[in-house]
Image (cartoon, rainbow over all chains, first blue to last red; front, side, top):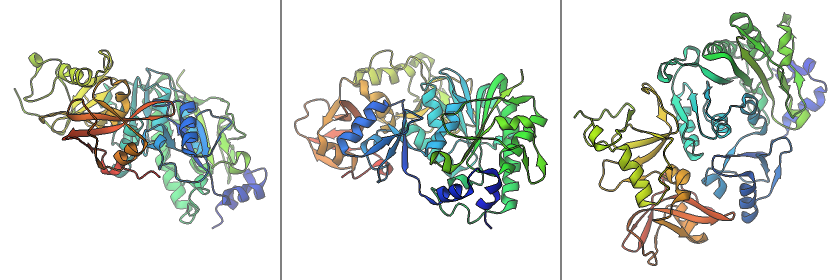
Length: 302
Length: 169
């Protein structure tokens, strides 16, 4: 199955799209501002002779020259988190404020959770949930290494997430960085497409719909939900948004990204979606030399 | 007095007079431990709530919850109590130890690397207390805590957990 070929009708330059998907990605770290400044991390890398390049659209992202980011003092101190640069998009779009109540519905292994905690200055309440015990253990260890103290970790099925541990109070902001078919990570995991099947895409889309619907339910009136995936499949992106728009009181809002992106698609394989899904952003690997990503922002009620 | 229920998070009592669970550390004693032994400022933990889950494992949480049932973690693991000498966790020392003014031992570059690798090393020059020290080193213009070391008989025994040890070149 030529998985990437499915998306050629959607991209502006199919040859560049395919070529980018075959190139490996550089190793990128995000500065954890709970423990260090971007300046101090750069100074530590300078002292250690580790080469890096700053990512122009995000002050806290550094592309490292070679090596594994785990084997250095900045990692040991929890000053950095190894994270592909597009993966830093959804937490930045959710943009939580210090002191707020925030929910990360599918949190493990914790790249976005730790980024959310840093944006909140490690204050307020951050609920980080996942349903897989092994992945939760990685989440906990990453959060602790990053010095996160405002997090409550839960092991629930996000589709039926219970607010009981949180005093039955809704959240100000919710991130659904959904489990997905991960096509957009092909530059990092070249075998990401080997096991691809349409039935897996359709199955996981059902899970995504359930998670996003519940996320909207546990968000207060006027609150924000960000939905993101690392896949190109409209079944897992626009179709999921279209579903929740029909099921719950929420709407898609426009937002800017400091990257070259394409709007969400309103038609796919004979299906049409709510026109407002165009407000979502598609990030293709060849446009910014990154992984592939999808991100949408919703306002609840109001 | 009732017994500890090691599988649930329960709030530390404010003081010994409020204690309902036998042997449970109090909030007052936990704060005194950090401010007394390590010289952290008195207000360092004002915004925090403290919880026990597991035998003597104390968690520090930047927020509060009415009753955190059915959760896996509340903030970070912070301190081991219910043993003769209380022991801070590596993560707590890294998060809060920068403000330590006592019982923090600054290591040179080679000593810091050996400490991170989990080694025990002779450091007879230390003239402070024995027991659990905060091991630090200078990096990028300031001192930064690495983890906990047990100092006895002229040697510093690294307490860096196995999964966190590294051999840095």
